[in-house]
Image (cartoon, rainbow, N blue to C red; front, side, top):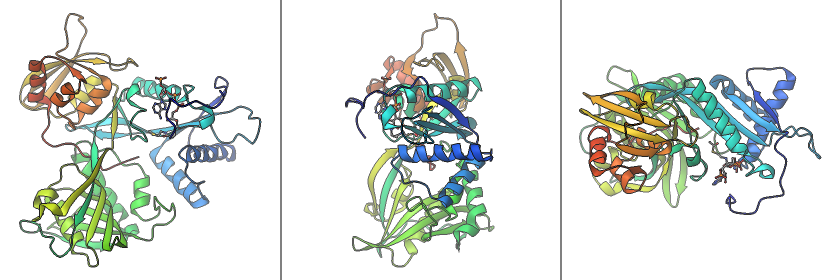
Length: 439
Ligand SMILES: CC(=O)SCCNC(=O)CCNC(=O)[C@H](O)C(C)(C)COP(=O)(O)OP(=O)(O)OC[C@H]1O[C@@H](n2cnc3c(N)ncnc32)[C@H](O)[C@@H]1OP(=O)(O)O
């Protein structure tokens, strides 16, 4: 990716671009041709291959299931070619965020591309700015995206809110876990046959787990084996095992692809692993470790803090290869989001939020009683904030990925030591959040 400081191509006009918001549900020929051009424009923007017919049909099915809005900007009369492909794209749909003390309406945003011929002329700013304004007008309190580069979205008020870990687990002969195995059993199911069970477990996990978001429709396609994200065709390698609790109720699953020998070791890649309890989480790891011809399990989406690390008899069996951000959050309504996150004990803090786009600007008093917060916007200019922060930092603070003192040390939160300690006493959360869903 070229850096913004590098010289741009000769300017292209942007004032007369044709602005369309496409509804994927519409199925007349002219609309479908525009949707097709939109998809090709997005693929071009990410340097992906052109989607084939099957991938196209599957993508359209997902866009319809999510009720996604596909917006694009087209050149009105390009000097060469048909101009079917837009020069800028963005898509978004409504979902939910588990903020820790309840589900919040959420706008999920993705497919942001601007053609190299039109870059750095404000098209992203226009599309995203309008998207956020429309979302705020509808009363949706928060928006989310995942990023291709860490430098793009902070200026629009998004802050990194969750991280994931890439792990390699040595599951050779010496692998063992402390403690007895959980009650229940694991059954192998063909991915297509497991589809409903897997979707139900994922939905239950979302409804009960801080920092998770409602899953976009393509997860069904991937986990049912209809879409291999790498080959973009049918996934012939994907395997699924479902964990059943003592009563026979599904309470977790793991999906994986065995890679054969990699670097001389039988290697398996976890595609997805969700469990409704820590005991089931470990039971699924016991199962993975029991697979023949498998000495190493790799998972690029593991939680940053995982009981597995402390359940293994040999702590060196779990090796962290890297960590990276997943969810970025953009707070639009601080009152709604602060009330929906978990708090501890009793106390009161006033947060003064700066927002260059204006949506979240203000001072917000958070009064915590028995771990629940009442949040009030303070209108009196004489009410100074205890802590001052940008709205992007509020996004980072929201789900508890970082403690407030670290953000203060980083110069991202301003306030006295006493105010930082007062927030820490009610607002810092014990375990970092984990969002197992990308989009
Ligand atoms: C949620 C997602 O979909 S993540 C995927 C993002 N898309 C990609 O990575 C695909 C490849 N890249 C692109 O398509 C484009 O370069 C985009 C979408 C990242 C940027 O689009 P542009 O129209 O060039 O951005 P725009 O001109 O509106 O820039 C707005 C501001 O962001 C800055 N900016 C834009 N892209 C970048 C970048 N990659 N890195 C750092 N800053 C950037 C601009 O300098 C500008 O800053 P300023 O307001 O301080 O002057």
